[in-house]
Image 1: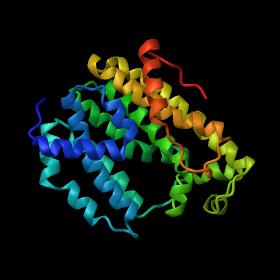
Image 2: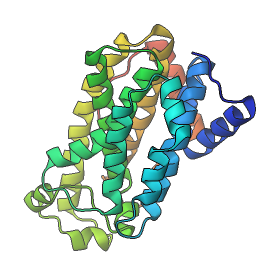
Image 3: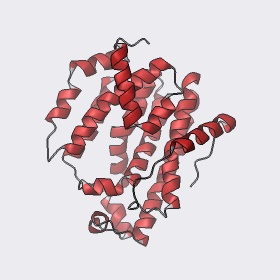
Image 4: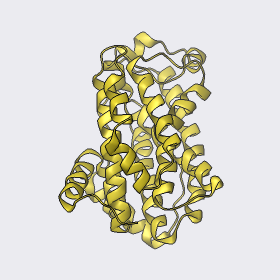
Length: 273
């Protein structure tokens, strides 16, 4: 697959990718260049619509829809052999953030995660030339795991935007209130709810990573690495007693390098909190 995008634009996309998504960019360094460039191009469109959703006041989907219908996006999807259906599903998920309504059940949370992240896993499969639906299922589950990780990491940041992605049923079951999260008040009840979500997220990691063996050999290490690097966010949250109000969790460059080396040596590491 040869990109028709100019080298100058490729460098621009790659630079934005390296700044805006350090963990995924680090993992993408281990991909063949043509795949890395196409994923950076995909990230360019995702970042645009995600930023609009985060800045939107009320129901303001027009700018997102404009990008989703743009010729630039259509040309990219055609060139990368990405099924536009998956991008449309992603857009529907991101549009829900512009008029956010709380999720009732955990399954609703997972549906949202599929739309905004599971679809990305499938589109990356498209970029790799994978057409097997079973692989798509695994890729979607890994994407859900990554987005659930984001939700747990970004509790405080999302609350500042007036959003809580934990389901109202789960919050009620554990005795956690919206007011508690909006005020940044940590409690044993919130700890237990966060840990329950973390354990559910581990299950998605374990299931999703099974698809790595079905990918082209030259892409497997990068996907395994991205999963293990992102999983470290959960590990660090647990070390903080699952308190999401102590600042943003991230993985330092030195830690990324160490995890990459360990993964090269052992090939597989367990997903265990």
